[in-house]
Amino acid sequence: MEPRGRLGTIAAWLFACCGLIFLMVVIGGITRLTLSGLSITEWRPVVGIVPPLSAADWASEFARYQQIPEYRIVHYGMTLEEFKSIYWWEYAHRLLGRLIGVAFAGPFAWFLVRGRLPRRLVAPLCGVLLLGFAQGGLGWYMVASGLADRPEVSQYRLVAHLALALLIYSTILWVALGIVSTLLPHPQAREGRVGAGWRRAAEAVIGLIGLTIAAGGFVAGTRAGLTYNTFPLMDGRLVPEGYAQLHPFVLNWFENIAAVQLDHRLLALATAVVVLLVWWAGWRALLPRPVRVALYGVIAVSALQVALGIATLVLVVPVPIAAAHQAGAVLLLTAAIVFRHTLRRGAPMDAKARAPI
Image (cartoon, rainbow, N blue to C red; front, side):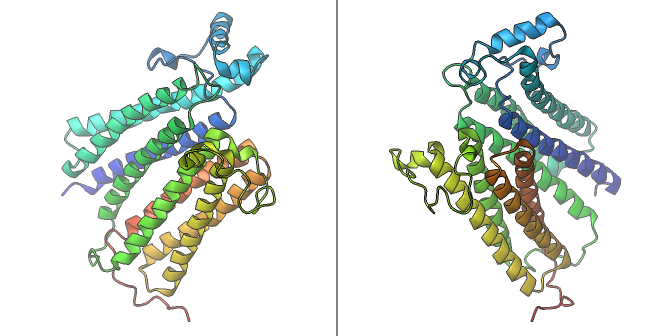
């Protein structure tokens, strides 16, 4: 059995990596909201860590940006100072990506070489490392889609980039939670003591959250949040006119602004309703205390996220609230994963819990 202190150190390292990825997702959202993502037009993983340091460097960087469609169509006439304001957001996003790579790969290699990494963790953490390399390449693949023929990145590549980031985040979080669970004294806990239906319900919540986040990525990628800024109706209708104007029909879900926004709304509401139903069922059941606490966390973050989503929409996507909405999405995913993890080795039904009347 591994020493508890060593396992605690590994868990702390993994949670710190989760924190950095969380920050990365939020800064990535701000980069998108401020139209900053195409301000750096080259992919230089090593030397790119050094920003422009002289007037000549800035002039060269700005000249390269002026050659891409986004400058000509969206930012034509931008001054150098205005360019710097968007450049720094993209630079911070890329710099944080490099920092995450070092923060994960460095300790991972040290733990592995020193033989301090439990064997059961080697395969999943190696997988995370490979996904991290893929994420860097996918990030540049996304940026490249906006450098030649269009003034913005492909919404498909944007969603893929976001989804991979959250997959990495979720995997690291799950592994870290697993380590913590081995450090907590629950000798009486056994798999299956809480019904499998609860695990399926938690997985359904995670699946709906994932779909809603992906739909939100298409809203961001098509800038669909800048239209139909009323709630609950869209242009006075439940289903906006032109929902199915593209052919084949499936393209509407990804490229038609009316359909993209409505789909995100419907998925968000469906997620909130399912979370409410699971919470209601959990309130009536005699669930173990950790499960009940985690479930209350899910319902609380879900309510906050709905409020942030509506505020983002009706206020026409102000950057601070929209960034908080994206952060709320990751927090909701986190809460749902924690809830599911409390059911991984479910404790016995709590005989001392009061059943609601």
